Length: 258
Length: 87
Image (cartoon, rainbow over all chains, first blue to last red; front, top):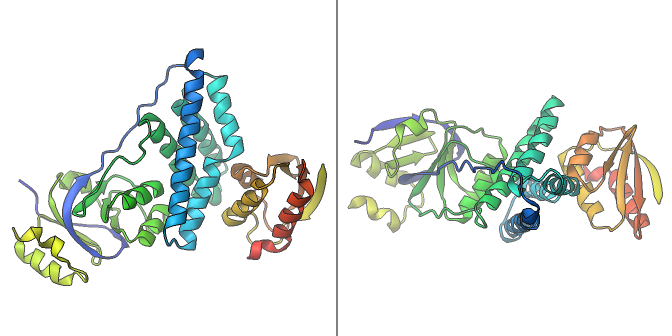
C-alpha cells in the first residue's frame, strides 16, 4: 500500500512534473584492494588512460553541443582541467607502477589525498573546490569499474529520479539520458549540481527529508517545484488540478487517465 | 630558460576562473612551465598546483618557462596577469 501525503523540499528549479518514482541506486563501486601483479600493469594503465580519454570527450561533447551558461561552462572546464591535470596524472601512474595499486584504487588514493590536503587548509575557497575533485574522482572510478559505461541508466519521460545525492556530472549525464525531474535527500541551492540543473531545465527539489523512507519504486508522484512539494500517490482531483497548472501540458501525460 | 617576476593585479587574485584561464593558456605550449612564490614552486600547467599557490592580489610570482616556445608562453601568461584576467 503506497503512502499518501506530501513532502517538503527546497526548490532548485521550478516547474511541475507528474510521474513515477524511480530509484537511482547509489552504485558504491567496490574498489579492489589487492595489489596488482606485474603482468596486469599494462592493462591497469590502459584502463586508466581509456577512462580519462572517454570522460574528456564526454565533457567536451557537453561543452560543444549545448547552450550552456557561462557558469556551467566554468564548472565543466574546471572538471576538464582537474581530469587532465599533469601532476595528478603523474601521481596516478606512480601509484599504479610503484605501489602496485589497481587503476581504480590509485584514483581513489590520489584524489582522497588531495581532498584531505584541501580540508587541512581550512579555507572556504579550497572547501568549495573539494566537490569538483570528488566528482571527477567518482566519475573516473565508476567508469573504470563499469568497464566502459559511465551512464548506464536510461530514463523515460515519466521518471522522477529519487536519490540520496546528485553530483554535477550525474546531472549532466542524466539530463542527456532523458531525465526531466529529480528529488534528493541532500543538496543546496548553490551547489554546482543545482546550478547545472537550472541550466539544463531539470525540475528539481532537494533537501527533502524522509524521502527514501516515504517513497516506493514506481509510486505515482506530483513534483510541484513551484510550491516546493512532492505529492505522494495523488488523488484524481489533485492530478486534475495539477494538470491545469502545468504550462506545457501535452498529450503524453494522458496515461494518467487510464 | 626564461624567468620573469610579476605581480597579481586582479582584486580576487588567482581564484577559480583566473587559475583556469592561466592553466588553459599555458597548456597550449610545449615548454615546461613552473610558477614560484617564495619557496613554493608549482607546475603552471596543473590547476591543483596553481590553486595551492593561493596567490591573492599583490602576490609576487616568478614565471619560469623552459622549452622551444618559452618566450611565447611567458608573453601570453604575463599579458593575462597584467590585464587582470579581464576582471
